[in-house]
Length: 404
Ligand SMILES: Cc1ncc(COP(=O)(O)O)c(C=O)c1O
Image (cartoon, rainbow, N blue to C red; front, side, top):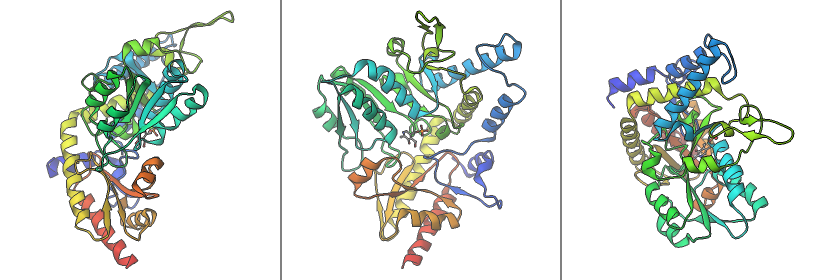
C-alpha cells in the first residue's frame, strides 16, 4: 500500500493515537483490532436513531431493524463464501466452537471415537473439546508441528483413522502466524469420514477466506479481530450439518412452538440464537466487512506479508532475539529476547508508545512445545506501517541497553 493510502487509512482509526495525541504504534491486532470510524458510526446509529429489537416488533422501526440484522447475516456469510441460512451469530469464536462441541459434538461423539487437534491451538479450540470429552468419553489426539511451526499434515495423514470424527485446526496460528493448508486438511479429514472445523479467528482479518474453496465443514471467527465490535462472531456450518444439529441453548427466538407437553424448534440458523441477539454488533460487523472489502483482502494480505518480512529481517539483525514461526507467517511474529522476560520487554515498549502482546497467548501447549513460558508477539493490522516496525526495533534496542 502506498504511503498516501496508509496515511488515509490510519486517519480512519481514532484509536491509533495516545491520550496525549501522539502516534500509538499498535502491534496487537491479533488480540483485537482497532475500529474504523465507519464501524463506530454504524454502531452508534444502530444504538441511537435506528434502535429497536428484531424479529418481534410489529412497528416499522423494529421491522427495519430486523431487515438490517438479517442483511448483516447475509453480508457476513457472503464475505466467507457461505449462505445466510448457514451462518449463526455467536458471541465470538469461543462461543462458536463451544456451540459445535455442545451441539454437533454431543450428538456425534462417544466412546471409541477420536478427534484430532494440533499443538498450536488456542485454548478455545482445546478446552471445549475437553469439557465434552469428560461427558462423552472420546479420545483427543494432538497433531505435531513441522520444524517451522506449521501443523504437520503428513503427520495428520499418518494419524487419522476411521475412528476420527473431527479434525479441528486453526486456519492461522495466533502465535506463529503459520497458515494451514486448509484444502489438504479437508481432503485428509474427509478421506476418513471426519468433519473439518477451522478456527478462522486470525485468518479472516488477514486472508481472503472462501469456505467452499477451503472445503471445511465448520468455520468460526470473532468480529473484534476483523475491525468490528466485541460481543459478536460467527459460526458457519455446512447446510446439511447445521440442519441436523440439535439446539444447544434454550430460550426465546429459537423456538417454533412452546408447550409443556413438548417444544419444537425453529429452523437453522435461528435455532442456535436463543434470546435477544447482539443486534447493533451484527450491524457494526457488516460495516467492518464493508470497510475491509473496500480496501481488498488481497491488498491487506500483501501489505501484512511485506510488513512481516520486514520485521523478521529487522529482528534477525538484532542481537539476542529468537524468532518463532515460519518466514511466510501471516501478519503475526512471535519472538523471545535472551535474558529479558517478554513482560519486561512489553512494559519498556509501552513507554515508547509501542503496544505488543507478551504472554502465553492462550496457547500453553504451544509454549511447552517451544520450551518457553511466554513469547513477545507483534501482530499487524491493515493500518500498520514501517514507522511501527522502526519504533518496535528502537524499543528493543533500548531494552537491550537497559538489560546490558
Ligand atoms: C486463533 C484464535 N482462536 C480463538 C480465539 C478466541 O477468540 P475470542 O476470544 O474472540 O472468542 C482467538 C483469540 O485470540 C484466536 O486468536
